[in-house]
Image 1: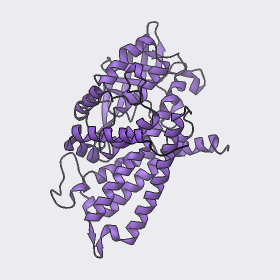
Image 2: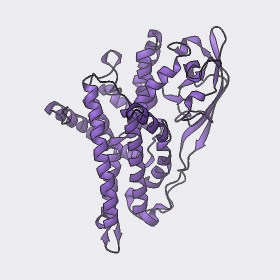
Image 3: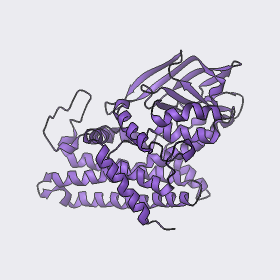
Image 4: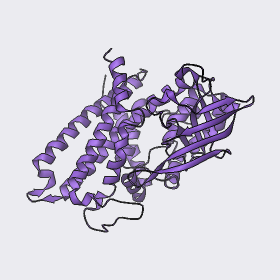
Length: 395
C-alpha cells in the first residue's frame, strides 16, 4: 500500500491551494478559527464558489453532481480546506444525508432533494439524539404513526446542530413500538416549516448558539418522505454514522490547530524566555504531535484502502476515538499556554480584554469548552471502544 502522493496528486493539491488563495477571504477563515461554527449566512457565499467550481460535494458520484475524485483526492481536498481554515461543505446535507439518499432513496427523492442540497439552496439538520437516547440511540421514543397517506410524528430531539437555520431535518422515528429496538425504526425527511414543529435554542458552555431542541406535536409527514423501507431506518443510520465518525476525527483540523498553537507558543514569554522553549510545554507538544502523526497515517491508510474499493469498517471508530482525544489535548494545552489570557474568553457581547494579549488567542477557550463534547457526540468514545473490542479484538 503506497501512502505517498503521486505527481498527479501533488498537482491536485496545488490546484486546491491556488483556489483557496484566490477565493477564501481572511475574514471567513478567521470566523472558522474563532468559532468553529460559522453561521449559514457566512457559509452560503463560500458554498456558492465551491458549487460553481464543481467542488461542493467531493464524495458524490459524477451522475449526481460530484467531481469524480478518487478517495485520495477527497482526502487531500478535506485536508487543505482544514489547514486553510476554510468551511467544509455542509456536513448534514452533503456529507450525511446525500449518501443515504444516493444509496437507499427513491428516484423521486433523489431528483427532489439532491440538486438543492448540492447548490446550497436547502440547508439540513440531523434529528437523532433524544433526552435519554444519545449513545443508546436505538432506545429513541419519537414516534411516527401511520395515518394512511401520511405519518403523524410526536416526540423530541435534542443537541440538534443548526436546527435554527435549517430548512429540513432528517429524523429517526419509531414506527413499530412492538418490534425490537433496532427493528422498529424508520428514516423520515421533515420540512422544518411543518405546523407542530418547534425549535428552541441551547446555549453552549462557550456562550455560542449552534445546538437546539426540536419538538414535534402532531407533525404531518407525507409518506413519500420515508427513505427506503419502513422499520429499516437503523440500517440507514449505521451507514450514515460511519461517514460521520471519520469526519469527527478531524485529522487536518488537528494539524491546523497544532500549528496555531506552535505560533502562539513562539509569541508567549515566561521567566526563562519563550514558551516554546519550556521543557514541559515542549514535552506535551511533542507527545500530541507524535499521536497526530500516527493518526494521520491511519487516516491515509483508510483513504488508500478506499481507493482500491475496500469498505470502511471499525476504522471509523478508531479514528473517532483518537481524533477527539487529540483535539481535546491540543485545546487543553493551548489554554494552559495562555495562562491568565485564557480567562476572559470571547463572549457574544464581545471580548472584555480588548487588544490585550496575543491576537491569536481568540477562540481558544470557546473551542476548549465546546470540545468537551467531541468525545460524546457521534457516539461516545466508550461505545466506540466497545465496537473496536468486538470487531477488531474479538472480545
